[in-house]
Length: 393
Image 1 (tube, helix red, strand yellow):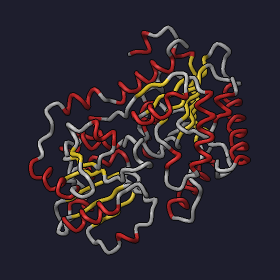
Image 2 (image 1 turned 90 degrees about the vertical axis):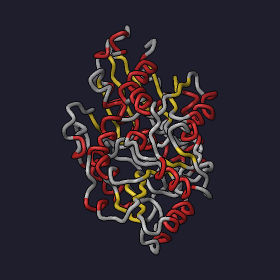
Image 3 (image 1 turned 30 degrees about the vertical axis):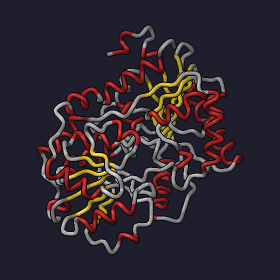
């Protein structure tokens, strides 16, 4: 392993991570740190989301999750989804104001988080190196506080263009953070290009994949909910929000009127427009460990995103996961999908349905796909991540 070759003793490193709730869903940051937990100590600090709270079922459920985290803060990081995992970080969920939109609320939340960090660091020995890693661009004062030996911005998305987010406020906070961070690791070329010039050092680490987990789809049988649906089954999993191209979905529904379109994952947009399309089925979130079984019933996997400012920087985590199932994968021309064009069918809005039909008829996985995905494992990404953040520490 790479850390054995490094001068620094991994037992003398403590990493404080600010990111999405530990165990809530398998984000790239969580995948990476699951491979680092046996190499250094980690405190994971759950924070509130970036969006302005709305009156919606998604936000109501999310608010209850946050309240539950506050009630059970200072946990070991275990969850129902990962009970079999041996290693977990220390997890903290400080009570915070539900917004970073305004300068005052952002200031108060950053003070709350700074206090939480001080409580963590005060227990560490003086010879322990401390590293801050954040996927959230809203805590610039922690980057400028001078209390960490290294500060790292793990830039996983352009949050300034997210649906429901106050982009101007996020842009202001992110700009301050970029000026003070020691280095940035971006997950897409667009993120690297758009923000790299503002930081001292910038690196690109694209998302990895758990190949063994998702390739198991070929040996599994789908649950009854999928098995009973009319074929073909065209599927998507992940957050279903305003970045989805509704026109593409409607066209797929019409062109495959005798088949089925399956959407798995949280819903954060109005789906009433699809109520009359009886062959579109929303099943809600599916546990990570169960995803390969559900996808085993798909005849094609789709990435029907809009191609605009809100999506030009994204690198969908599901892209390589789709590929690992060896199902046909059809995507709108997202920049990161286009870069994998030898494995992914790229289609415009106008020819998306035809591309699905064509791929299902003639699909044959690229002979180099398996080797490529093995080279993109989360273990390799974690080793690269660790090498970068600890180099010269």
